[in-house]
Image 1 (tube, rainbow, N blue to C red):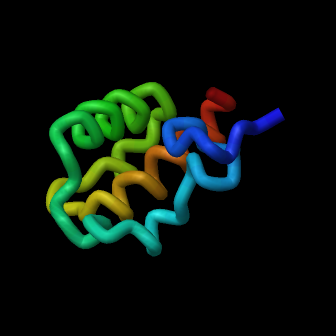
Image 2: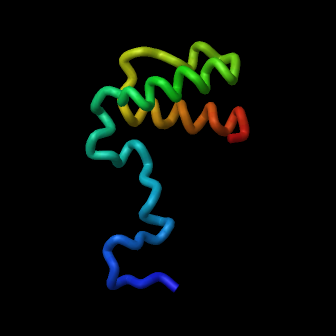
Length: 72
């Protein structure tokens, strides 16, 4: 049972937002995203998935696609 009176407890529907809805989605990808995307693209033998200059939202979508491809 979810305790709605505690704002620190989030139901699953609130834990994952579409990258298009992110307030900061248009900002440059983070260093962590850059590193993870590079690693995943190498593991998936898909170097075209890694690209400099991506936004946070674009990087997130590519990371999700590569994770699906690698079944992570």
